[in-house]
Length: 336
Image (cartoon, rainbow, N blue to C red; front, side):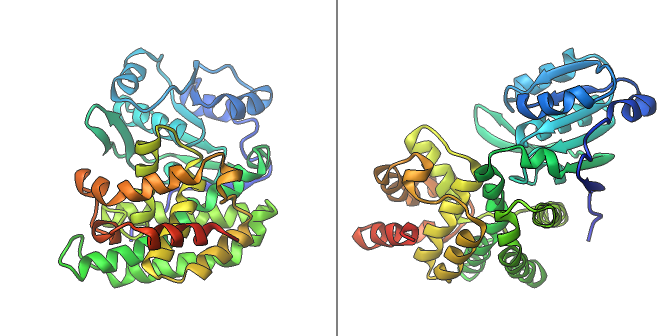
């Protein structure tokens, strides 16, 4: 197995980073989201070379950052798009990199590649390795509670993704089955189940435990050069939901919604999935998420055609025939 990314945990771990970063490599270029940078700026302790609020992950925009930003090390602060934009500038500009995630919602701070958008879709590129990832418990607790709790999404997805991987391999599809990775998926979900109440209460141990699971998943993605063990029909449902309805909700909450629905359709311990969501306090009803049952139904009806059209990994979605039974299963999966 490859090495885990270096990480520093603690209350205030991201405060006062400016002098040390500047001493080591010169004034840093900060690529951030507004809220976490506004929180850290008063205590940063040094004048940055530049501060950019990330605008997206389109290839042309990322290339403009590499071209136009002044020299200096890169510090990413915020959510997944800030992490990925900083990684792109680090890799293509050959600059030192540090990362400060503001939510435990994605594993972007622990993965090598960048999810670049262009006219043909999402493509994974680059090979970024930070000098350090700073996980500041206080900074993460400044976010609304539902955003932090929704951070379980890209760990929780191992529950349905592993099932889809096994389903696909049995029907002759790649990537090849790996018993260790599959067992790790089960262990990761079991650990999430135990961490869930601590995540709900936003405790230090809960945040650190969740980030450690993201960190492990990031290493596994690099080791195996795929994410089959944590990306399956639940992610595909989320992508389809965005495509059909023209809007999105927080990735972790939408992913969790996908796990609840698809585990019921898979017949894959849906009661266990519901228990994890309850223990973690993740929002899951359409009313709480600001979406409608019609939007969920529309995404589910379109899902079989969507996965084939987009050439996504084979899963139960490929063979799904959506009728009243499946729509009822989806509603029952969220009715708790």
